[in-house]
Length: 245
Length: 250
Image (cartoon, rainbow over all chains, first blue to last red; front, side):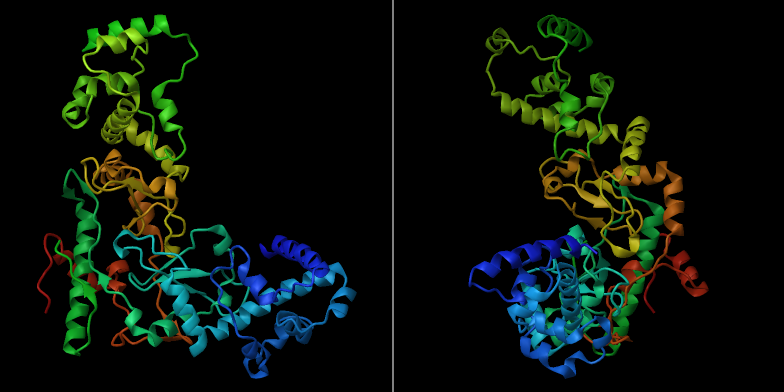
């Protein structure tokens, strides 16, 4: 993973900070690193509660030590005794474990609130689709097990999945956000669901629609009208943004 | 017109030594101009191809001279002209002129060929949509007039429009590619459409703990139609009916 060089970075800064008495928390260091903008700050109370960590014990070696390392409870003398190889391993495991806990935390009420703040500030980027009008995105994983696929971004406007723009974001494991986060988020904050634009693009030559693409577009519009009718019959708001095309 | 060119090119070559930058290649190689292809000077020299552009671009003559490297950059020339215009204004006009010619050129056979090469090298970027699996995109404008909208990218796979990823492409004028380019490109390279048809039509479904969200919920699926293609017998017959207009919803 791309974390390796970051790990080295981190161990350098750790050595540097040893000499001064100013100590930074591991979580803050982790969040402050370039490319970690998608992560929110997980409460230490949440991390130390064993109930929240069920089934994560097997995911890393020396689980308790890693947890202590994340919440900065490992004392300096114990840290100094570690070999540099172990130190790197510890850092790597800490990142992974933090990610796994993060995936659980973001679907709790507090986690959702923190992610809402990040969503409002568009920390996860904006939708590249022209008709979505810079809609902020939500991170999602396609698998809940780590090491399967990288994080993807979900647009609540066009309900589609995008690859993060920057390579340092597209290398983050999708399991650190989980498959349920986006759905949970929109269920929790239905007022955050944008109106869906119905406007779309059909390629034209000198002002004339391409026949095949236009036919598909018409059929798709028919599906939309049918959906709208179905929803109306059930008394559900369609949430489409009508445009005068 | 041709006499005029002949005249100036003679004076141009006598003044300038061999080591001077040609305008068109230097424009196309500029940072952020990766979407432009090089229009051959013969195309620009043909008056027929330039029909109507004199009305759209200010200082047309001077801009044309600059694009074609025919401009005599001596001081006497500046004095000769009725009203001296600053070089940056001419430069801007030349860029507009080149852009508009470019939009015409890329609809011709050699132009399409040049753009296809860029397309193959993914120079216009790839579709950010996950299920399009890095499909190359095509630049396209939303209007053919200057100063309306910036360039957009068309993905042949999902048929949608996207904004360029890099900010250096965000400010490019859309009219420099024109509204017809993606359509002509698709019709010229038929194999591209076949390739796109064979691509997977997977779509994403929002789930919570593995369960689909009900359509009736506010966060339920509303945009599935946008990525939907007729598959079943019933859908295909419905698709037939959509040939010229959208039928009435029963």
